[in-house]
Image (cartoon, rainbow, N blue to C red; front, top):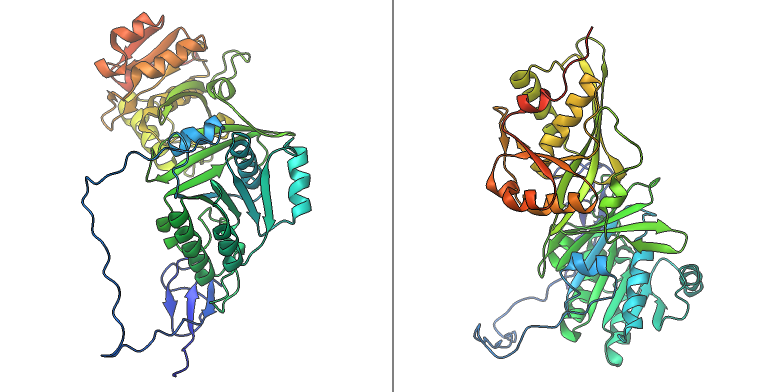
Length: 459
């Protein structure tokens, strides 16, 4: 038998090459190429046995809708679409120390407390370490089964010997080891092969498989990109290290929405779900401050109010600074250009700092008008009415364009005590339903109407 030729695979993107190099030609990553010995395929000949014939079934065959398995933590069930689907594979990724293991330990314990069978398999911690964390979280009495193992063959054999668990948490996929491969745990081949074996086991037994994934320093999931394609659902657990709020966001979901978020607060007793995150991201006690605007946003099906803060300061000639936290820097540049070209607001000679309070990241264009209001307020040194919320998209001509779910945004604002709103002129931005909610809506058609609300201070 011919000896298997060695190849070198990039652990960042999975590209292979015949020899080692310090930099990957495909993705540009440095020191990411590792040696890998591929398995040799058996020679194909005329006498080789053929594969079996698989059965093809019609689309409208027997069988009903698969019942989901809610874990009992409402924020997680919301993000995955109402509960876990039996036989599905979920990948949870996040920065080190953000609370991934804590979240999944609480989720598995909550499902076990509801009568399901849950197993937590760790390749990073010992049994006593997991018990110490469970005691700190108040979960010592939960009927949760624990194991410390990294061998995929042992894990598969254990889960197949008895009735399979309802959910299996594997922490983490980068520590799993498949003995049919010669590479070390954490390499591209091991991550891909281990995930494939575990996902095949979950599909065959109907167990919900939850994998914990590490991320690189750029924030991408470590390992091959194919890992995200193999699983059914990809969740990101994000938040600032120095901030107590954590957000679970669905990036991919074959069985539910991909725009839902779950909000948690990190406490000494673990993660506590926040059913009304608007009360956390808005500070009603502070009073009016120049450069602050409350944006009425929507994350999935949930309206969320968040405060956008702006600071405009004189900058050095020719090189003004633009610093953005929680929003798109390119979108900020567009709003600044529109304010200067269409509304006569001179900001090109000023340093501009923009921050989304609470560590939340906003991606929808409906925040354009709130950002413009915060910038205009900061430039004029005049505070916006503290009882007002703002939403709307800004076009390149300076027009204020309508956005979706305007009524839901205004109802959430009314629930928190806001009495006024600045919104686009369109029937889907609120209409009669918004006026009936007890909010006085000021309709804006152009950014000039917004800038006129902040007259320049007298010299």
